[in-house]
Every structure is written in structure tokens, then in C-alpha cells.
Image (tube, rainbow, N blue to C red; front, side, top):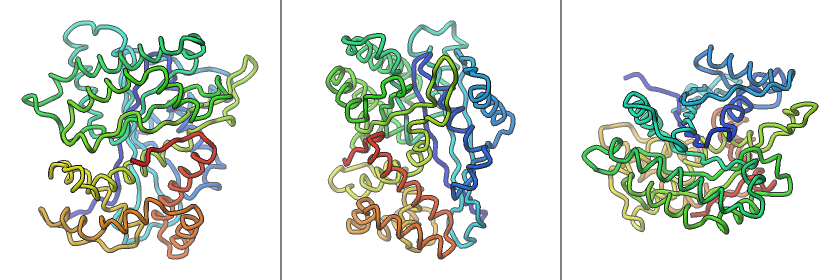
Length: 386
């Protein structure tokens, strides 16, 4: 049997038109192609579709060199896949040695206006189905719209979350099979402030308090609608995590791409946030009473990551034995608690130890966990402890 040694993670990005999704993606990818990136990081990022990668790189260079913002992609959905691999030779014995990240961009216009005819309606459904494998979804809040509604931010925020909710509700009957909630569905919905450079005085705690203070009812109703579409609602997190994103510092004179906020957290969030949250959910099965199908769906990649980071040997795969073996071997309360609450100095020591043992992918993953800690220290990221 051929073993796929790439861990695959999907993220979905939702935002209204003009919220900066294309700029965000281009600014995420472009710097990874700079010569200095390879020297400063343990890994490299390669676009699996070379043509799409060149377009993103061109967008980035246009902003950097010509102050040219990428054209908006109205009514167009795109998926981009990237291979993240350690620079050094991988450990041949490791169960996985790379990360495949798939980024799904959902057109904002489909939240704001009716579709034009049956063909576009079907395209909207197909697009949403394509992102059902995503573990993490980002709900973008546009800082410019907050500024436009200064003093009445609730008007924008309530409208935004209501539009998201209505857009998902319209898809419900077409997405669910025989009306049954889905096992495979985005389970972590992060509220993200795009264009955060426009509100430099606002840290992630201020952003969270603004959203909760002005639109908690609408955010809760969005969570309820999402909960109706997914099995195992206890394994669902909507609006519990917050992050700030800024692609660059925009001025009339130039676009300063060195003044980025939060973009270095995209890969760590995609790779490690599901690991953290799924590990808690699986370990708390007795409390949450999750259906077995949900446990099976959550445990695969998460179990591999837990085993990698804990230095445990994986059980031999089998039709049903792999899931049961993973839970018995790596989801003990002591191990989960020890991994999820590892202090910064211990994470640094674990990364150094992985490098010493030539476990380069484990070192990359541990570096991602350190990046999340740094994001919290800089008040750019707020992770739920639930």
C-alpha cells in the first residue's frame, strides 16, 4: 500500500467584496518566494499549480514595486494548494514529512446579492461543497468598513454576520444529504480583522471586545445556523478565536509590504489550530458525547500530529484499529494536557531536540506552535482555551 506522507489541511476564507481576500492571499504567498525567506525559515512554500503561483507572485510584486493593488475577482471562486516542506532532507521514518495547504476563496458577492440564474446558483453550491474539507474558516471583518461606520460599528457588524448567516442558510438544503447534518464540515470559525493597519490602536483584545459588544447576538445566530449543518455540535467553535491581518502599510506614496500583521500566522493556524482543538475534543469525548463518525473524522491527522509532537510510535493501520489505536495510544488526558499547555521554553527545547534528531518536519510544526505563542504575546492572536 502506498503511504501518503503529506498531511493535508484546508482553510476557507469568507469575506464581503472589497474585504481584501485577494490581497491577503497574495501577501501571504509572495514573501515566501523572496530569496531571504529560505534563509530565515526551516521550510519552503511551493504552489502546486505553477500558473496560479505566478499570478499570486505577480500580484505581490505589483504591490511592492508599482503600488498596484490586485484586481478584484468578482463572482469567481478559487482554490490554491501549496506544499510546505522542510528545507533539510526529511526523516524517512516519519509518518508524514510535509504539509499540503489548500486555500479556498469564497466570493463575497454571494453573501451580498442574489445569484443570476440557475447556473450561478449551482456554481455557488459546488464552490461551497469544495471547501467542506476545511478545518479552519476565516470570517473577515473589514477595518475600512469599521472606520466608515465609526460610532455605529454595530450597524456594519450586525449586517456582516447576518449576511454570512443568510448566505449559509440559503445553501443548507442543497448541501445536506437527505437533510442530515454533515460529518465533514469546517469546525473552527475564526473572526479575522482584515486591513488591520487602518486601526493601529486596536489590538486583538480590543477587536474581540468590539465584536462581542456590538454584535454578539448576530454572531451567536450565525453559530446556530452553522451548528444545524454539522454533526457533533460539541465539536464546533464559531467566534471563539480572533486574529488581526494586515497585508501591508498602505500610503499614497507606497505600499510597504514589510509592515505586515498576522500573515505569518496563516500556516501555523491552518496546521496547528485544528490539532489543538481536535485533540481537546477527542480527549473529551466522554464529556461531549461526540458521535463515533465525528471522532473518526477528527482523529486521523490530529492523531498523527499528536504522535509526532509527543515522539510516540503509531499503531499499525487497519480498517478500524487505526482510530481506536490512535485514541488509546496518544489521546490520554495527561499527554493531551502536556502537549497543549507546553510552555514557551519547553517548546523551544522541543524544537531544538527535533533538529538535533533530524526530525525536520516535527521541528517545523513545533516552530508553528511557537509562532502562535508569539502572536498571542504581540496581541495579534486570541485563541480559545475551550
